Image 1 (cartoon, helix red, strand yellow):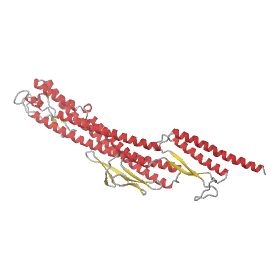
Image 2 (image 1 turned 180 degrees about the vertical axis):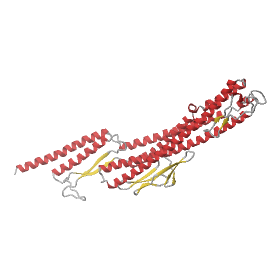
Image 3 (image 1 turned 90 degrees about the vertical axis):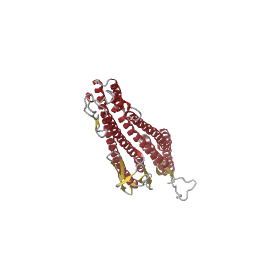
Image 4 (image 1 turned 135 degrees about the vertical axis):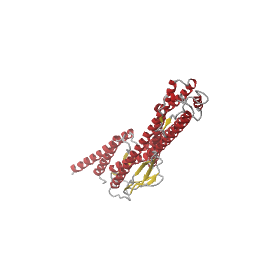
Length: 441
């Protein structure tokens, strides 16, 4: 291909393809997962040359090697690892924040009701026969029970929400595993260096990013770019050799989540699935703690009230019934049945109940529990901020290699337009030369 026409034609074909590649880059500048492409070109073997020897003055035009994607494997892997960590912390923080809202006084009013109960008891010490204060005392008891039931209901709904979110996330994870295997099939059939191969590789990397954000995965690639995917840590096969092994999730009676693969337990320590498991564990712990505080509080107040006598001289009755936060209910007492008195006087039992207020009374324990929850959320928020910063930095480094820069594409567009014009001029010169030679015969 050492003639001018051949050289010009090879240039037109190559530079037209290069311009099309730049057009694809510009059109997909904002497409998630798209890696910048460039056309690899090489000097064509001219007449008298071979792949082992090339003359110094025997040009042969240009050949197309294929499409090359601007990617860095190390930066991609680092980005996926940090993305999994960021999704883990963000998901965990989301559910811990919702738990804090469910336990807040604005939602259930427990803290306000407890304060009102003890404040009313103090007021009864000064006026133990006041029926209005007795009614307020019983209303505070009912408000406390109602608050515990509300908090229990909120946590129950939250546990169901986490379970549903985990099931949906697992379904999506398995769907992506199947999609990844289809990409593997396509990559084994794609022509190396083709636009089709580049598109398949982009989709492969997008799926791997998504899977990494959901759970820890470890990919390896063959010569065609097809991936064998294993679970990080355990090394269990997820995709490979034409086989797809889906994962499953199971919720325990208390709402805790566990994952499995092929019937065997699967430990997931990163990604949104790990965050959901952490959130489920936290909610389960809070439900257990709420039940403990509700029953302890009920037992303590019942014992204190039963130690006194009511307005009719009868022994005090239990203030609460129920064995958990969800079943805690105020007993149907009348104002006259409030046991304000004891053997020491008409206000003795209220004085004893007020003396319970201190470092270990239900009011203080509930406030301490809320403070502990707030600290857990603050810690999760700090972890999330650090993980998000690392993920953003890794993504920026990856994008610095793979992302399309419109200024660069504009410069490349101008360069290849000029090269295309030069190739066209070469064909024109060849045509004019040939006409001159023919006209001279």
